[in-house]
Image 1 (spheres, rainbow, N blue to C red):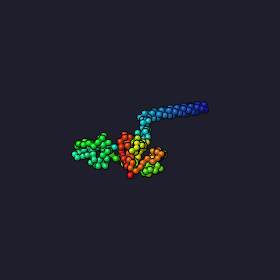
Image 2 (cartoon, rainbow, N blue to C red):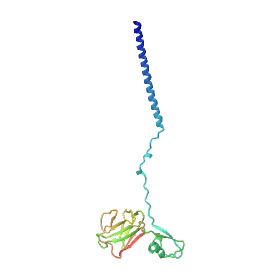
Image 3 (cartoon, helix red, strand yellow):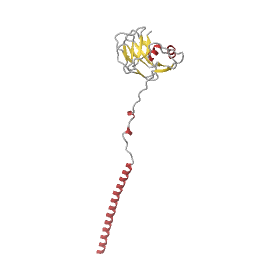
Image 4 (cartoon, rainbow, N blue to C red):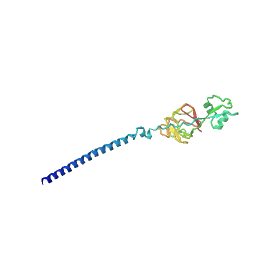
Length: 223
């Protein structure tokens, strides 16, 4: 009987030791397995580049290109027989315009091969409306260019030396117009106000439009 008891005791002890050994092996394997996975993930992450600040730049940071200015002159090469009068007729400008654009004070003889600057009519004074009535009187300026017309610093004047200076204003489309009223008012994108107390224009008066450099770009004689 004692032998059976001793045999059972050793069997149970053997089972207990086997169970402890197996549990220890499983715990050690689990820890080793987790370490291998962590190292593998670290190695993989080394080959993956982190996004930079430059890569996340938005479109709003892209510089907007400046608008291309409208050409104000073209060049005409003089041929035999050309005069300022004939050139002015061909390009539908006045002799005065040609003389002023080229820096002459009087009509001079042109030689073949000379280059004459022809002012481009990219703007015009379309009409003067409501002449003599302060509530209606206004000058209508029209854009003849293909693109936007920038009038900042331009001036409108009469023969008596009264001058209106344009604020920062743009006529956005070809054949678009802007009104310059003689009376007072609040400026908008389409209507500007001179701020006068009485009508300015009368029949026979000449209206001049000058660019920011002082060059006459359009004239209009009121009927």
